[in-house]
Length: 59
Image (cartoon, rainbow, N blue to C red; front, side, top):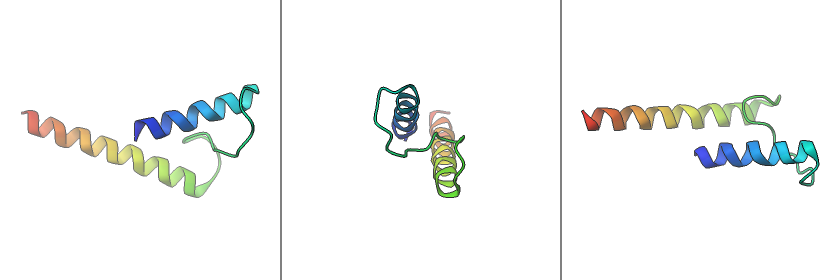
C-alpha cells in the first residue's frame, strides 16, 4: 500500500517537472478529486490499522 502512494507521488512529481508524460495520476491527498482522496485515505487507515494490530501481537 505504501508503494502505491509512493508510485503516485513519484509519477506526479516527474510529470510536473517534465520527466514523464502527463497521464493524469493525481497527487495523493492533495489533488482535488473525491474518489482519489477517498481511496488514499482508506489506504492510510488500512495501513494504520494493520500497524496497530501488529503492535498488539508483539506485546
